[in-house]
Image 1: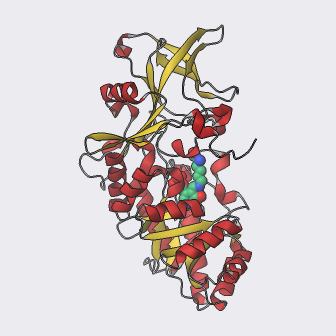
Image 2: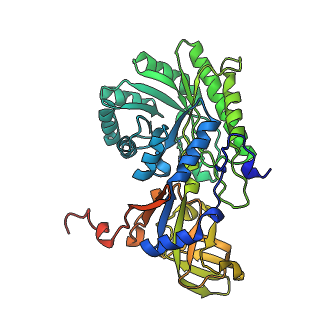
Image 3: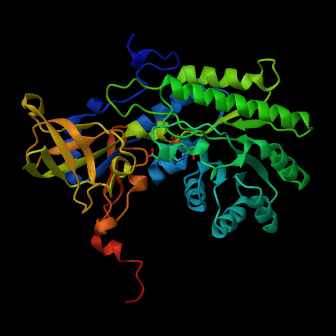
Length: 429
Ligand code: LLP
């Protein structure tokens, strides 16, 4: 059995990862010709498959999509239709999630600006919104606004996991209240008549290998113990949210996350709440990347091919403004040539560089590619999460268009930004 078919929760035809090689090359070429490049292509059917796989692995959990991974309307509507909830990091995400039809939304308030609290509290008057706080003074700020609804307390778990130091939130004091303060903050919230429902923690992003799994298990066990301590004090908590961070294999050689093992480890670790093996509380998870990463590719065209003593620089029309992850985290994304004769070409080591005037602006370095020529199209894999979402307009580069594939049809769901769009907020010179 290959790693791609090993998980028992996987429905036939729903593999645990969709590799770049599985995308239909001719369709990507046609879409790039029709819509231009750089172009994001998002396969909504794959988003549905990912949601289905998660639901099968965690049948009893409260699953909330971390909207920050990709907040484009067609993606949010697709996920809302699967019945998942939404986890939002800002008022803007809450607005977009509600607009897309999510019935359950949780706002994770990280140093929440007043404007965000105002907006979320307003929306909470009409919608099912819970709030997760990460600092006790957020209680004062919510009380000042007359809100005392469904509340979670984010705990800094003291353990971090993930693909890069910059995404290991679990060890960053910015996030959550220290573990030893958690019970006191929960008690204070309960005394002030907030509807305290549970604890929340997030170790980081990109849990994939055995070490990350150990960290996740430790985090869940710690949250279970803390919950038990608080319940012993007479405060009735009913949910433990153990974060997102479920990784995807960015490297083609990496195995996909074994979702069943993760689910088993999570439930076992949580079973320690009262020592009976029965968690006694509901489990919550909030994956972002897992739902959307392998549902997206970025298609880019080769502008320039330049031989240098060090390497062949392949200049493409997508860069750090379209896909920031390689520049920000040295993240690896698979890249393949979409040229018709790519299979017959020699491979060579290349640097795939974007058009932005920054040396950080490379999608890959030291990457073996079928010898590229000017005009070729390249596809960049696993671009559905934190791709378009982190796109920006540095160097006055308009953001790319996004095309959705949905049940055999394609449609533009975000039009290409124009240079005129870039100045539309300027009011006076
Ligand atoms: N829950 C909380 C509280 C989070 O802070 C995050 C991510 C998630 C859930 C979802 O994590 P995911 O399942 O998507 O890994 N821009 C970075 C990722 C930063 C994530 C920050 N928080 C990247 O491109 O890797």
